[in-house]
Image (cartoon, rainbow over all chains, first blue to last red; front, top):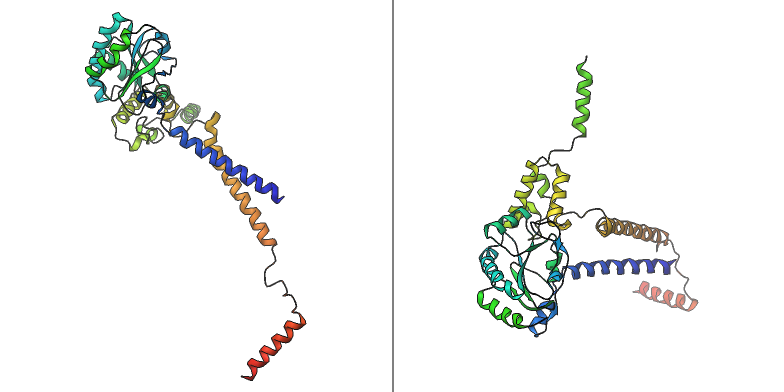
Length: 181
Length: 146
């Protein structure tokens, strides 16, 4: 009887510890992309089918395989996003003829506000809507804005956690635009 | 007299109708999706945006449940301060209850064992060996002589 009781206590304790460990681990940030880029590697870009902002249907980063994609996470309430989106729109227009594009990912945002933002800045590049931020989590996202440059084979070649500027975009994009799939 | 049935019908409809939603009633059950705190204590820009969203939903005539559903549609289930009572989320409700039951059960077992144990006063001391008894008597006699 005593033997059975102690096993029950051990099992209950193990379950509790497991639950706590799961809770701690699930709140941790994924740094695998940062580590891979820092060591000069290219890591496969996470993909997910998400609703397209302001349009019916779904889209995915995977739909653009063979293209260079500047993946930008933004929200309408984020000030630095307001500052960099005109640059990203210009970039999108400039690289469109070179089999490349900017793809926005809007999250932690009200869709009406996001659409108002698209109209205000006359954004022509598509944006996906990451309703619950799970796609952003796959990128180890921690703040706005964040940008990832994905090569023609669907691998992340460069990343910037913070606003981008022309210099960074040129440096990250030019070599990838020269590459073939 | 004809007024009575009409009043009864009105009463039935009044009690059956969903309660009017209000921002203070909803914002303490919702999270600020960016800061991870309850919406009613958050002062961030996202929180203001969420509050505007809730106000618009209330203005559209939605009740509390419908406003919360609209919030989940917009931000995902993580926007709710209390998880929905389905799937793995049930653990949030069942684990504390389970632990409480386990603790009560443990205390009950411990109390029963404790009650079964004989008190030290109830147990008679073992008799001394003849040798020890003689030595004790001699010691006590020596104290008496002092």
